[in-house]
Amino acid sequence: MMRNTFILLTMLVLAALPASVASAGGNPNVVYTWTVNDLGQGVWGGGPLFDDGSAGGNFPLSFYNGQLIAQFQPVSWHEVVPGESIDICFRVREIKGAFGPPYEFCLTDSLGAPLPVTGAGTPMIVDPHPDPEIPHPLLIRVTPVN
Image (cartoon, rainbow, N blue to C red):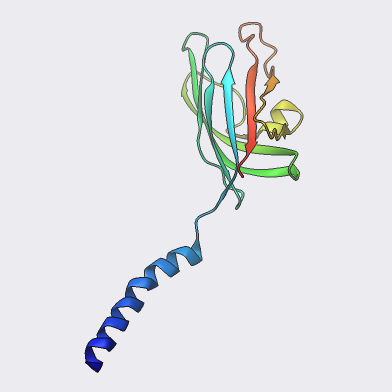
């Protein structure tokens, strides 16, 4: 009887060990989500922003009827004003054509201002490109996760 109890307790401890180790290392929690949509052709995407400063998701970009195609992969983010504005940094992977911007950049560098956090998910309208061939503004939304 004592031996069976010992074996049962040992099995329970061993079974609980991986679960406690996994939760101790923990996965980062999502703090915000971001989305971007073009009001014309070719930009759409989004993803999570984690509490460890990492970012997920991506958005592909296509302009000039497919002559220019790239993928923007978020690599990090930080709060500029906590709870009010953020900056997201991306790595650019050119797929077709020469895109031109640096291969890594932050949105504040490109837009001149951080992205506002909108509690109701209201998008910010941004017209990031002066080229008349790309006249479409973007809708960018940063939403806190409760």
